[in-house]
Image (cartoon, rainbow, N blue to C red; front, side, top):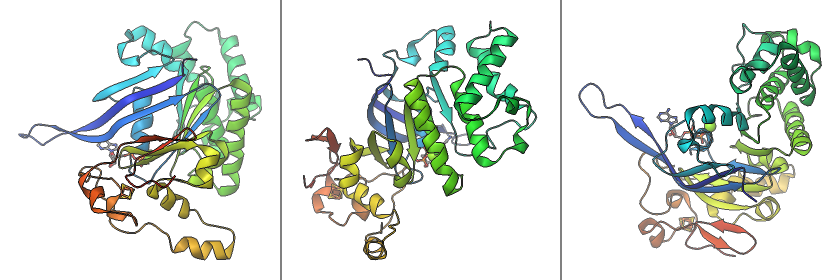
Length: 324
Ligand SMILES: Nc1ncnc2c1ncn2[C@@H]1O[C@H](COP(=O)(O)OP(=O)(O)O)[C@@H](O)[C@H]1O
Ligand code: SF4
Ligand SMILES: [Mg+2]
């Protein structure tokens, strides 16, 4: 089966202007990212702030240029689609953001906000059909039809994120990139929004990329977990095997950063927190990206970058000293 979304050897950098006289230069961020996502599946992407998760989301949506590799939407590279076809195909690939209120234009009604993508993706739709599509999108996110007449300032954070999801759904996407979609919400509301995304996925067979710096949040919704460190993938694994025991020392440290409800486990956890200096993504070390903070570091780790190697159980990790 063709994956709905794929990246092969993807590399991305930002162009930094060098001032009046100096030439602009490229700041490399993502290196050789490979991923594959099938319909109905969720890929959870975790990693510390600044490791390139949002950049990856934007590159998968073909919103920023890439320096190497390929992105494939249902087998087609958006970079090689004619402009009209690309505009139509963008309906397949949607995004929801971290700050739901800021993502909604305060001057527009929720009906106008939710229906707006249809003007691009299905411009020929009649007003009656457009209203029916808005009502259907609102139903999918558990909001009644009369929300279409309200304005963003009337919403709670959780309702605003539901509207953001409705707007993402209206073009009938195949994939939604969820970039920290619950990080700005109260903990009690976070679970509701995650459950809602899971219900919608079950009803529509959507594929999700769920980005978060919080391992506990991605656990419930993801089928596979991908761990990023300084713009590189350091581990990828099926969800259950990953949470039983992450293999990469960086992933183990991230897992240890999740608070434990049991006080004894919590004391143990605090002893394992991430220590040492996080290198700048602009000046990555020549060897392993985790070497400056890894409790298992050896001289080889500073000298040679470990390749991402396939391991039993459909997982892979980039470490010279993986204990299987
Ligand atoms: N538009 C941009 N121009 C230059 N650098 C950027 C831009 N956006 C992000 N960055 C840099 O790229 C790195 C990765 O950022 P980002 O992808 O937002 O990480 P994350 O989502 O994991 O927190 C950071 O060092 C950030 O400062
Ligand atoms: S390669 Fe070395 S520094 Fe990197 S994670 Fe493995 S043991 Fe730690
Ligand atoms: Mg981000």
